[in-house]
Amino acid sequence: MSQSSDLPPILELRGIHQTYFDDKKQQDFVVFNDFSLAIEDYTNLGQFVVIMGKSGCGKSTLLRYWSGLQKPTAGEVLISGKPIGDKQSIPMVFQQYSSLEWYTVLENVALPLTLKGVSKKEAHEKAMDMIKVVGLEGHENKFAKTPQLSGGQLQRVAIARSLVANPSMILLDEPFGALDGFTRAKMQFFLLDLFQKSEVADLNPTVVLVTHDPREAVLLGNDIYIMDANPGRVIKHLKPELPNTRDRAIRKDSRFIEIVSYVEDVMEGNIK
Image (cartoon, rainbow, N blue to C red; front, top):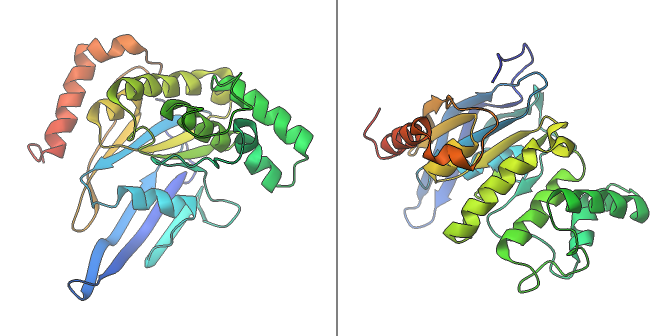
């Protein structure tokens, strides 16, 4: 990864406070207390930013801020230095399958374009191009549900739908969490391969991934933020010293194994 640019952080949170009322305890539960985070931008480079941590640390809440799905109790949410607005919110892929089951794969992927007023013909043409990129050609007329499609294929539909409007950023909230171990590993490398394809790489996207899996974090991440809870905070920020272009062989690399072990120790509280 090259040196950062002089641009403002591509994603930023300033002085975030988040509280919820606990009905059982009849008091406020504090998720964040004056939390700030700045994810730097890189000139003409895409990046995978990984956020991980214990349950309850607020990692998925951060994605909901940037996606526009949630507002903090107090504080600022910024994208490229500007307060988030309706036209700035970032597409998000969830752990749960989010496709519309009564729509075909083609209709699901085209949806962001049709909602923007793009003609049906143009939207379907662009959607079909993205369907080919994510390896779902031949499935475009199937309904986006099981058993017509597997879990991995449904997540490919969600990723294609998020990318079809050419966003410079995409949020992934444990997108492979519901998959079995074999399919999960396959989808991790699908994601790596996808973002190295010229059709996507030319977008120079910033991908923010929430995961609880240290191997997944190190495999995909250029930047890894590890959080703790009560209140939510970043306890470690690291940049794995691994090639930006990674393949399946990297899982056996001694440096990869070393970094995974380090992340596990941080997560378990063995390293402060």
